[in-house]
Amino acid sequence: MPELPEVEVVRRGLDDHLVGRTLGGVEVLNLRAVRRHVAGPADFTALLLGRTVTAARRRGKYLWFALDDGDAVIAHLGMSGQFRVGSTVDSPHLRVRFSFHDDGPEVHFVDQRTFGGLAYSHGGAELPPEIAHIAQDPLEETFDLGAAIARLRAKNTGLKRALLDQTVVSGIGNIYADEALWRAKLHYARATATMTKSQAATVITEASIVMREALLAGGTSFDALYVSVNGESGYFDRSLNAYGQAGKPCPRCGTPIVREAFMNRSSSRCPACQPRPRNAHA
DNA sequence: AAGGTCTCCTGAGGGC
DNA sequence: TGCCCTCAGGAGACCT
Image (cartoon, rainbow, N blue to C red; front, side, top):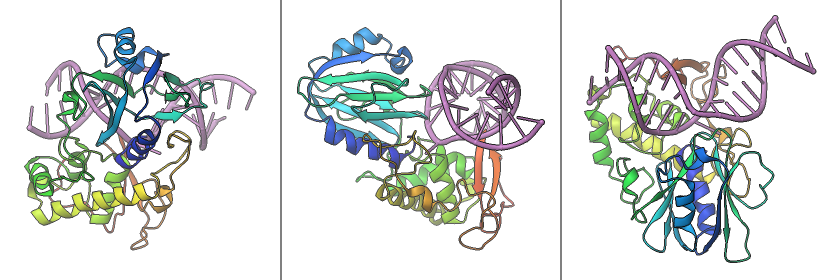
């Protein structure tokens, strides 16, 4: 479940169902699920047996579980990854199953498209070095808005491209980029280098607000691929103003939302509220 | 440095 | 019913 609110829903579920438990079994059913772990699945499993999970953490779209020896397991859900608590042994997409010394339910990593995956991080309990290049996300308590504004304005690119760049601000994907742009009344091709600090602050703040609202709604779920550890869907899809709304009237001005190809994916905007700027980039 | 293109996969849905 | 095409919330590699 790709973007920040959906990943945070998963992290909270893992906080409830994984933290404090000691691993008794790790079974890798699909090699691609641990392809980032270069030492291989047997090494991955051996490193984990007997370890106790001490925390479930997140930055942007990355999750990691801190272990009692200071190491961690990094997880990225990719396009279709899920963590589920028990009851998914019949899924053809079950990739890694974790069992524990206690009598509680197994925790399963399920991933249809296998773009997601797990890896062991030596010394990564606080912040895995493998993801140190990812910028802070807007929901972190120490998020530095001023620094994020500076990184955005230092880019010589189009605004949506910069919002999707996880080294500028992390956690934003295609849905929340489109929603933040709609809220800020800005076009995806707005040149970042010519934006004022105020405009940059506005769009980043709108991204932060829309992701917080989505989190309160349990995330955005269009189908069963995007669910919590208990299999529950979020309902923020009802509150989307631009993403996936092509042909429907803009909730602000009534002009039909348009959908355009951009960056090899789709982009939705209101052509009246978010007109293409004369100084558009790319 | 930036951006275009391609790749990794599976499955759903539309058109014919 | 089946087949082919397009699309999907990510991200990293490669090339220019």
